[in-house]
Structures are given as C-alpha cells and as structure tokens.
Length: 297
Image (cartoon, rainbow, N blue to C red; front, side, top):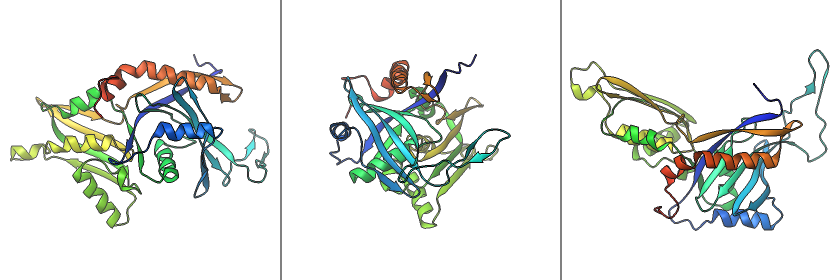
C-alpha cells in the first residue's frame, strides 16, 4: 500500500574520475565551499543556471544539493476544470529543481539522487569541470558479477547494442581504442548521438563468423562505465543458449522510502535514506572498488 506521506527515491553510486596527472582534491573543493557558507559558484548554461547549495560536512561525509534554476518556459498552475495562471516570480528568481548528493572521501564514492526534473550526474560533472577548470567525470558503479559474467571466457558474444551521446570533453571518452575512434567519427560528421547495433552471422558457414570478436566484451564493458552511455546490452551464447546482459540495468542502485514534509521530501530524511542506501549496497560497492585498506590507487 502506498504511503502518501512517503516518496520513493532512487540513488545511484559513482566513483570520481580525474585525469592521470590531476592533483584535484574533490573533498578539499567541497570543504572550501562549506567554509564559504555552503554555496558554490553559479554557472550559466543556456537557459539554465546551476549551483551547489547547502553543502555541509557531517561525520566526515559531504552532503549537499546540486540545483538547477529555470527562468524560461515555466509551467502554469491551476486545477482540473478551472482556470490557469502563470507563476509570478520576482526579478532574478527562478524555479529550482535539485538533486541531493553525498560524497564519502574515504571511498571516493558519490551517492546521487535520481530526479528526472533536475539534472543527470553528467551535468553535475560538467558543472564541476567548468568551475574547476579540468575534466571531472562520474563513473557509474556496476555489479561485479555482471562484468564478470560478461568477461568470462565461457560466454561468446553474438550481439552488441549501444546508445550514447558525444561528450564535449575528450576526457569523458571510454577507455577503449575502438570507442574513441567511434566518437571521433561522430565528431567528424557533426553528429550528436549514436545508436549502434552489431550482430554476428549465426548461420554463417564459417564458424568463426557466428560470433563477434572477444574484444567486443571489453568494448561494451568500457562503455558501460562511461557517463555518456544510455544503453549497453550484450547477447552472449554458451552451449547454444543465449545469455542477455544489460550493463545499465546492472548498475548498483538503491531505492529508499523518504518521509515527506507537505509537498517535498524532508531534507534530513533524504540524507538518512542516502546513508541507508550505502549500508544496503556496501558489500556490492566494496566488491567493485575494494575493501578499505585493500585498494589499488
């Protein structure tokens, strides 16, 4: 039964990706914002503005909001069967949509609230990259068994389906040579998005042509960890049986119920749910990023 006083919120988990030579300290950057009152630099991007808000450090964990401000194409308000009217905003005011986030510096782990009305994690990374002046990406964490199943030598790939957008920053390219060449081609023809489907010839007389090359699996795996990806599906066969693997569906994710205060989630309840999400998925997360004290930098 649905509780009208609660809302289900979904959280995804990301590691912070930086250039190999980068000296950027994400925790130091966020903590400096805390020292300035909790509000980061505003960034104008097209019709929207973005800002970090209400950033605080609690028990060594950074908590805050990534806010999107909308001034144009505002919705109207009204009721069914009745008249509607515009939303009256004061000068310099805007509609705010936001994503809650937390950052655990000990694990280099970002927990990010999904909110379709606000911003994807890629926009948060773009904001940071612009403000800081160097490339920052958020790499989604995928269930270890999904990657292991894909990369096992016992599964032979027969089909690959990827959809993704061209990033504006080359640092966001996947760590795969073929993927980089594909994105370079997209850039050369002025394209913005790719939907790619590759299949083998299952009835070919040449047995080797009945499957894709093994590197197709590492290619898909590299793309699935990239923030630009939208779809990453692989069909692999073992003993004549197809095994579909959806690397996006296998991202580590948690859904938590959060108490509502009137129309909006209670802020403290959101961060409590975020902590519960981490506890729920801790084993899966540490299987990917390693246990504390047993990690390779």
